[in-house]
Every structure is written in structure tokens, then in C-alpha cells.
Image (tube, rainbow, N blue to C red):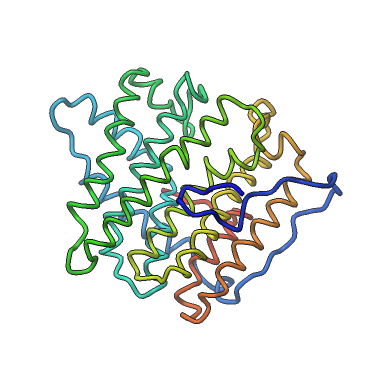
Length: 322
């Protein structure tokens, strides 16, 4: 059984096809009635505005200015969807948590996410000169400064949580669990493991690399929000599986939509073909929504954002103009 970014073995271990592609089109998965009427675009863009402002305040330019400019270049990049922090806030609010309590962790997740992208794009890693349609960090500032910017963002995220999380809303024990969760996610049992497999190849299934590189951040975001909202351990487990499925779903759909064949060689679409990748996307969508059914007891309005994230990841119904 594969290990997730957490230390606990999980039921869901990715998808390895056991049959050839049947040419099946992606189907509509289980859909919550509340998600059909929920305005995810307004919810998401409103949160993006708030998160962007807080990120801008969190990384002011100090001495030496060069490293801060490199950090800000990636963290404050236009077009960033802020999916990790938005999922964190939504999971917190599911349990009646205050989003003010979630914002420091939400911003920390975006810092960690940005740092991982900076490092992934490096010539010695994925060697990608472009990120979100603009030059990657190392293209603008050089590989040496990009490495330093990423290195600085990881601990800044932890510092941000410890320094700015309201103590009257979040107990110290929860803050420790948040830090532990994020540390596991970026470390050798999470995203670093995924990048290692991406670089080295070897006997690892494609599901392992995809789960670690893309599923880990989704599950961490959902679990952190649950911790902040006061979720039980069983509820955190459901959020973990939900977040992982959504993170992998988003990437599988990106692979299907990507016409650049050279980028597909390490993806589901590249290894198994687009049609089988569509089947996998449908399986992930169903998986994510099944994990959410235990939260229906909290009411449609509370769980609707999380259901809607699944639909967005699968179908990309709208553009986020940010």
C-alpha cells in the first residue's frame, strides 16, 4: 500500500489500469444537489482577492531586496488560482470555523505551493522556462536565486502560521498538527518523493508519482482546513481522501487537455492514452464526492463549495479572471 503525505496508510492508492481503453467518454459523476446551485466562481474569486491582499502583506520587500523580489514574483503571480488556500478555507467553514482563523494557514499553503513550483521548474528538475504563461522564476532571476526563493518560502509559511494564527480561535495543539501536516506533505513521504520518482523513473507506477506530486497538496489543504474547523479524526480521514482525489483529478484533466505530446510522457494520458485517462478522471470524481457524503449532515450550504471543487476540476465550467 502506498503511503500518502501523512504517516498513515490510506485506502485510496491511485489508479493502475488493468484493462485496455474502451473509448468511454467521461461521465457525470455523483453530484450534490447543493453544488448545482452554488456560485463557486463568486466564492472563489472573493477569496482570491482576500488571500492576495494577505500574501502581499506577508512578503514585504526587505533587505536584501533581491530574494524578496524573487519570492514575490512567484507568490503574487497574476493568474494564480489559489486552489490550496481556497480549499483550506472551505474545509474550515464546513465545520463552522472562522475563516479569519484559516487565513494564516491558507497563505502558508500558497507559499509552500509556490516554493514547490519554483523548484519543479528548475533546469535540474522539470526544466520548464514558463509558468502560467510567464517566465518561470529561474528564467527571470537565475537558478541560484530561484533556489533561494523557494528555500525561503518553505519556512516562511511555518512562521506565518505560528505568528499570525489567532490564539483565541485555534489552540496551540492544532497549530502543531498543522505544521506537522504541511511538513509531511512537502517532505520525503510527499511531494519530494513524487519529484524523485519523476526524475529517476524506475519501477514505480505512474500513480505513485501523480499521487505524491499532485494529490499530496490537495489532501494537505483539505486536512488543514478540517483541523482548523475542529473536525474529528474520522472526518479528517475523509477530507484527506477527498483532497487527494481532487488534486489528482485536476492534473489528470490537465493532461487530457494538454496537446503538447512531449509533456505527456510521464502523465496518465501519455502512458495510457486520453480515453483511459478520461475513465480515470471519472473514477477520481466519483471517489471525491463519495468521501464528501459523510458531511451532508452539516447542510447543503456548508458542503457545497467542496462538491463544487470536484465539478470544476473535472469540467472547468468557467474561467477565473484574477
